[in-house]
Image (cartoon, rainbow, N blue to C red; front, side):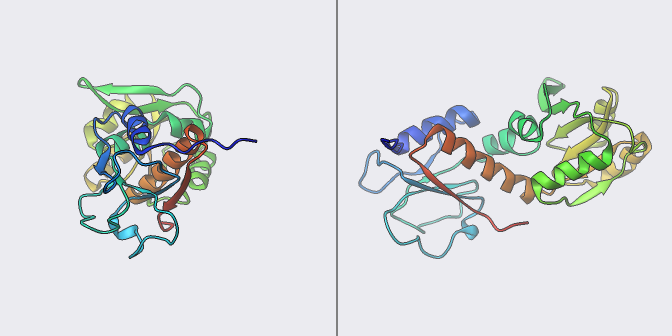
Length: 234
């Protein structure tokens, strides 16, 4: 069978721009090459997640979520990046890809004061099963607040922030479990007062999930691309 041709750097940047809604994904172009083919893409959150030197063999490209501290390392490799778009689309918040991975049907966008603040879904699972499924997908969690009624199937909100006013807003929409990145101490009393369950996945853990999801989507879009995620387990 014929193999699929690898994408070019422009192909990858254009796809990332559409997927993550960011205008320019190229942090550093390839030296002396206007638009190289990319057969290998390594994905990392931070420059510190990269080994000191590139792997041997043919050069590829990097995707680094926070590329601003990369400096002159790996000079032969072009660098792609996304910060806000990656966080918005691939971590906690409005993330239909996460809902699909978890088997949550028909997730809905949550708006508040004219802005998108996350998504809501009805997994149809009581707290123990919901938590077990999240732990399976993310490899654990950082902090928990059990809900007042752990035996009842709960509507779930996946949110990119945790503030008392947001907890009250989603509670008013019938949400029983609040999934976010980090537990904010200033909102804990409100969660307990409302009887909301809270799962704080951990900021880095949710970003590592996003890197793996991005790699999965890139492989599906570009079968000729080899992807490797460089991120230690949380």
